[in-house]
Length: 67
Image (cartoon, rainbow, N blue to C red):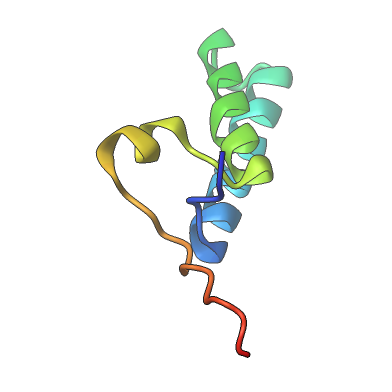
């Protein structure tokens, strides 16, 4: 399981996830707001299973070490 979520994508996922969870917790939106757990988790772990299936990678590839 290698990282496939880049920095900007990661920040967006964490912010959106937290906003959805907070809005659901305070009752502004319905229980469906807890779906924010998914973008939050993918942002924290830097891995998105959907990206893996689709072959998408928003983080830079690791360069091999120089000799």
